[in-house]
Image 1 (cartoon, rainbow, N blue to C red):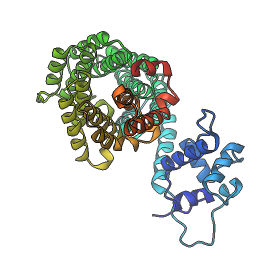
Image 2: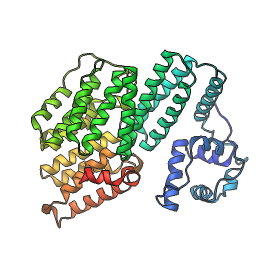
Image 3: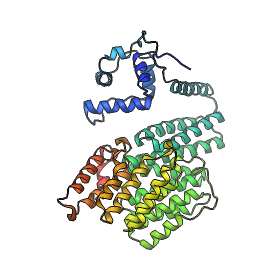
Image 4: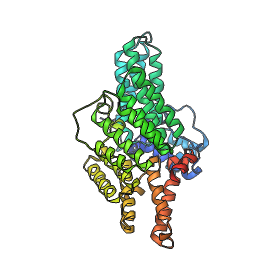
Length: 441
């Protein structure tokens, strides 16, 4: 099916294969080129993009926005870009119909739902549940800042729906959904380096889990609080929170694996090797066919995949100085990840496992092998360089700063690459540097 573009901008996006996401990435990239890494750079939300390409713009955008667009397509003025498409090209590409249909469906649903202002439809809750699930399952493909925006938008929508119903069952379901968005917001805030806000949001999720007696949410939130604790130097508190989370009933096997992995890391930070190995063993035990409605049914960021477990075990092994286990588990994480369809592969897990593999090789005095292992790390886009990979690469940088490497070119080059890699990451660019320095120091 084909529909004609309404503006030159739409025509160019279709010609160049730019969906909204690709357009937004290119728009941000050119903004950085022109104005540097500034929080005041122009942005383009999806609704705004639809207005631009749909011929619905009333007045031209500001001068900096026009400058970015004209840099993206040299030879065209902003006025031309928002004007009609060329008429003399019979091969003019089709507009992104799939995106347009999706946006229309959302707008139509919002309009229909607004007419039922005296009550709330069960379809509304179903739709919100689907949207939360979509964000959770797409987390590994999205920059954390984008996840945060999507989850916060959902949070506001859910809050609005809670004000419209007094039916206890609906209130219960909406509170659970609200808790799930708070949990996603917490993870995104952590990945961006905002540890204090991540902690508050995780507590919010835990309170929703406690209020609704939805123990999987409560356990997930307490697990998040545990890893925030050990990343900020409170490993004893992390052990306590993970232990408390494991005591809740109604948890599936995935939840238990995640919590044991978190507990193992906390013990490792305390230097308790025996307890670390015991928790690692428990995290890897065969399943008992237990499932729950969060970690298994919603899944996505709430799940804990085998490759993620292997990566976590590798990192924990490094903390207790077990380079052999660390290398084996890092390799296993990369192998499992490589067997998944491309769209299901997490760039963060790949980079984290690769960094752990490199660190393990350094501990075995294999400098060239470490440099080779780091190759996948450099390909992670700046906006997807989360706290986990920043911490891992910073530890490698500290190892390479040891006196034994002074004067050698390869360690120097790797340290410089790590510094530049982390310098433009969201945790360093956006987050509070004090917290990062504490966990990297």
